[in-house]
Length: 168
Image (tube, helix red, strand yellow):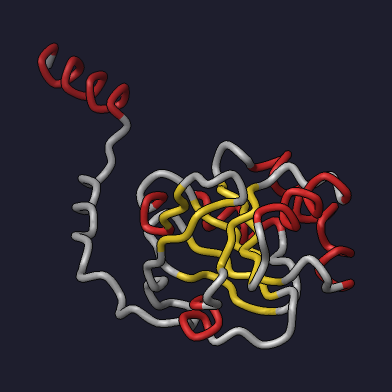
């Protein structure tokens, strides 16, 4: 009787639960492409200060919010403050970068200073990102999660919930 009481007490403290299901095994990565749910195409560029920017270098560490455009684009200029707010709020979890098409380092630095952009200015002098991401009008936003999978692509800044999800 005493053994039964002890066993009942132990089970009560343990909180009788079925065993946890095994963690899902990761499958193969999605195919590389430019659509939501596909692995982002890898690219390597340099920022306006000459430092390398390797897109795949963030996989496993941080999500990425890429903003494609030019320094002369008024719509891009209008979004700088909103993009910088994302950097300020989520900079530890999300790498924020402007990928500037056909720009010089001098123009990019002047743009960053003039519009008070605290994020990196990545230069794409050969415009390779246009073909890689099938860019349309600017600005064009691409949100890539920590696994390197595209979670958003479009003309509007993705919402906070989507950015938070990509950062997990």
